[in-house]
Length: 220
Image (cartoon, rainbow, N blue to C red; front, side):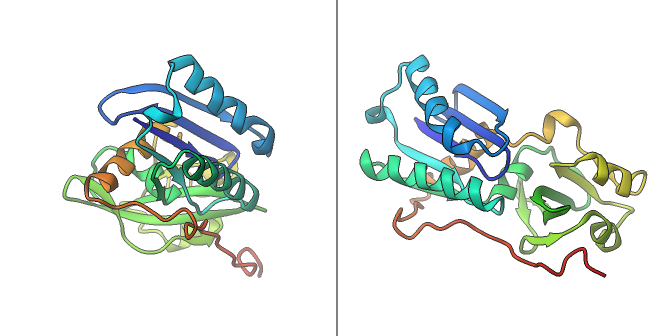
């Protein structure tokens, strides 16, 4: 049984399951209230499903990129939970969670997250051996720069796509539907389960969030 926690942006995701069955899943917009809302929501999920910490095999946590506050709070909670209950922790890149739930298609997949101040975090993916695999490092960009960088004949964009992004990219790319743009805790559990199956886990003392800083983006 894994507990999944992703607080990389205002869109928070929690899930509880063993990979084969998802017992509970919860997504909500917390509007920078991560500190106040995260712990009660996790406790409520565990209590509702009757799952104690001693039944958990590991904690899976999104490590970014994302907002400084969201990542710091989510990772601190996950590390504290794992250490206090002596269970493993697995850190998963946030954009991998976005990409994981997308169906197979030809051409590149571009996963995006809100990075604040009209910026986005962007990472390309390619379909390989049954999964979307990263095809480069995450970068900070903006919608206009992304449009200039994309292969417009094949690009498919998923993730946190706001009205500004849709307006900037309209008719130049294809978009994932709204129900596939939600970062799901169930996807986080699936990726973490793969990692655990191959014996991969993280040292909670060393696990750190992925922050991207490029203040020049958006400036002319």
